[in-house]
Length: 243
Image 1 (cartoon, rainbow, N blue to C red):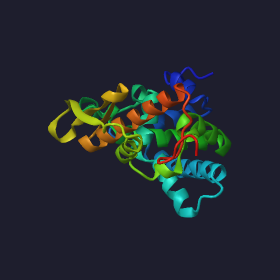
Image 2: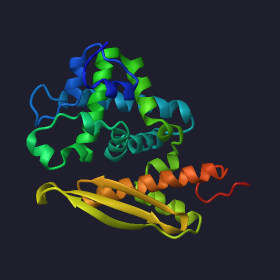
Image 3: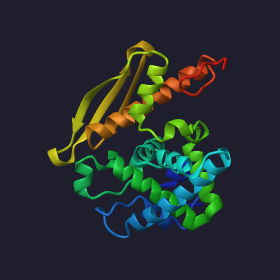
Image 4: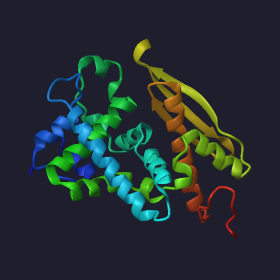
């Protein structure tokens, strides 16, 4: 059994590394030193796209190539990967240089997304395709289970706005609640508020737009949970439950 301090991360992934050096490399940013995670990120990006492509191909047999490509892109973008990385508390395990640490690099969406892809690449190299497929599907969880091809091709703010408009609900309000870091490496925290639904969600990114997108995605997911809790069946935009 590994005695590495990264063991909690292995537990979060539900995967035990044979080659623990791969795990360390996956969480090592280039600012910290070599070997860093960029080569593993390259592998992980390819594996992630393959796993998600297969999942979408099997789940939606009537979708054409263009729709499948758009759906996959909506699931493997930086915002989604950063969200998954935060769920895994990946920032706790990142190895960063002093400059990146001081500028809040452990919370930067690009660094988190890249590190998660590197982790997927490390699992693939350590355990093979079946292992990384299981890890990726588990990490995505309800995001993959609830995937809607009609919505995945849209950015989070557009998807949220259309969802609200279809139900004649007030549009969301966005507000910057915090700005951290030095001027050239700022991190923005944005809240997305939908008072009529008692929804408040936040997102963090290296610019306001990215933070708004993450906040909108989090708000949309809160609304889905509310709908499920109230017993409402999800339906495509523009349709009613009786159709």
